[in-house]
Structure formats: structure tokens, C-alpha cells
Length: 291
Image (cartoon, rainbow, N blue to C red; front, side, top):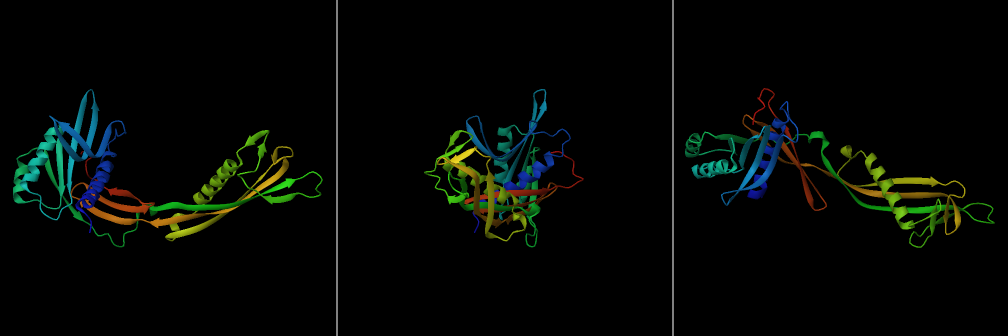
């Protein structure tokens, strides 16, 4: 069962996504003028307050406008006392307006809100989440491990033909263009570059969930006299390996509609012990771009 914290966070993510989308409709929008934060802490007259969503607009010439949001993803109705506490947050934040987002309100909460001209009540409701495609094919991908083998083709004095040998990068003496190289680092950098290139080409959006083994190979050729390995001339170096890539499909966390503001779908992906969230908002076209 989801905790109150998780449920509250889901609604905050949705409201943040919707309000961010609304803000971007302003003709003069830019990151320096409009600011939006989750769970902003403020201290007013020695009292600390946590604001679920805080929006600040810098109008220029010393004029700022602040709007705050309280998000309650509760089944129980919001009470009169909740409205009184929120009104104090509005005053402490110096906000022009405060929006209380919840599923429902008692009649006394509604009456109390009417006494506070800076409070607006917004109802939120759940939308169906089944059979909804994940927007933009959002998914997670992580590298689980990389393996490789390297062979060097050498030209040795007195040998009629070149010779390909395996390499121990911990003990090999590699010189390229007259400069001694850390053989282990040289090979490791090459390996990571090839593994990353192979991973980047992997069409993970259309891949099934699970582990995928991606093979790769690469060859580097050297002009005569340019490189040596343990004082033998290198003709070429060949790298063959594979990278294990895990694909994790996103799961829908919530699908909300906030009245008169818009809709937001939030998805999550869990990788390597961490959970990433992404929210996608849709706002009414006819809605005026005001907080």
C-alpha cells in the first residue's frame, strides 16, 4: 500500500508538471523570470513553513509575484482547519494567491476559503491509467557489465609474417608516438568508448524488458614505426567484446486531472536502487496563461 508521503508526492509531481506547462505559455517566459520549486522551506517571523509548490514571477523594476500550492492526495475531505493553516502559509510567503488542491472539501472548509480572498480551491480526480501508452516511449536503461578481449598484431624482427598475440594490460609496455602509455587505461578508455557507442545505437525504445547482450568489435591500425608493445612494432590492435544492457519499462504512477488547470500523467522507472519519475502535462488550449 502506498504511504501518505508517496501519494502526496504523486500529486505534487502532477501539479508541478501542469503549472510548469502553464508557465511556459507566457510570451515572456524564460528561466530567469519564472521559478517553480517543490517543497520549498521558508521561515517567517521565526516560524518554518513547507510549501508544496512555490511559483515566483519576477516582473522587473523590483516587482515580484508569488503563488503557492498545497497538494493533498487524501480520500478524506479537507477540513476548515486545513484552510486556516494554508491561509497562514499564504501570509508567511507573501503570496498573491494560494491554491489548495484536493479531492474534496467539507462545507465548512469551503465557507472558510470564501473568507480568504487569496485562496482558490481546486478539485483533483483520478483518470484511468490502464491501456495508456507511455509518452515518448519513456523507459530506463543501465549498463550491467562489459567484457572484452584484445589482440595485437606485431611485426617482430626476423619473423617472416606478423604475429597476433593476446595482451596483459597490467604488464605490457605500450608506446605510441614516442610517448609511454598506461596500457590498462588506454585499453579501458577504448573499451568504454566502444561499449558506449554500441549502447547508443541500441534501439532500446522497442526492446523487451530485461538483459540484452550487445556485441561490438573495433580495430586500430598504426603506421610503421608509430607504436610498439614491449618494443615490438604494432601493426594493429583488435578489440572484441560485449556489453550487458538492462532495459526497464516505465510504470504509471498516477494520472490526475486538476480542474481548470490540466492533466498530468506521471511514470516511474527503477534502476540500480534508484527510482526516476517523469511527468507529462496537458493543459487546456483556451486557458489564459495566468497562475
